[in-house]
Image (cartoon, rainbow, N blue to C red; front, side, top):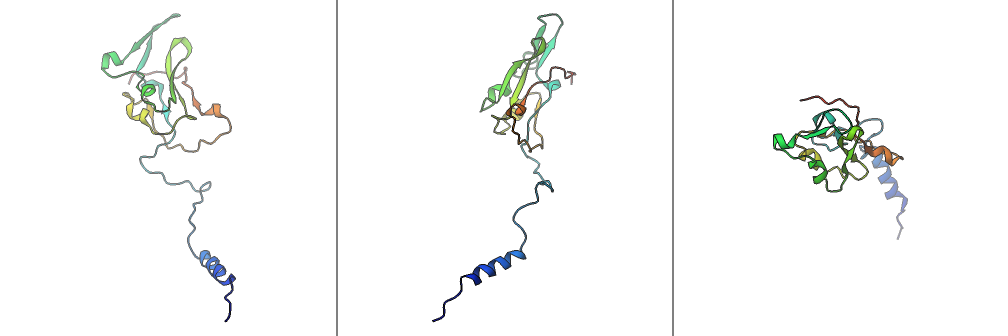
Length: 148
C-alpha cells in the first residue's frame, strides 16, 4: 500500500488560489463605494439649530424657537442612547450641542430626531486617532448664524 503525500493537496490548493479573485479590497489605495444610507461621522451645523441667541450685553436673551414653531429643543441630547451629545455653554452664555464621537455608536437617532436638520450624516468614515480629544466635536462659537 502506497501512502499519499500530504504536500500534494496543499500544493494543489495553493496553486488554485493563484488564479482566483482576491477576497479583500485594496482599501487604502482604492476607496470603497459607500451605500446611499451610509452612517458616517455626524456633522452639526450651528446655523440650523433650534436655539437662537438674541440681544447684546452680559446676559443676553436666548429664544427657544421650539416654543414658536411647536418643535422641541434639546431633542438630540434627549434621544441619544449613549449620551454622546451634551448641551454645553459657549462664549456669551450661548448653549450648543457637543458631540463625543468616542461614545457615539452611529445609530444616527440624533439625525432623525433633530426637528431643524442641524445634525446631518456624512460619508466620513476614517476616524481612527490616537488622541481621544479630537473625537469631541465642540460647537464653534464663531460660526455665523443665518436665518434659513
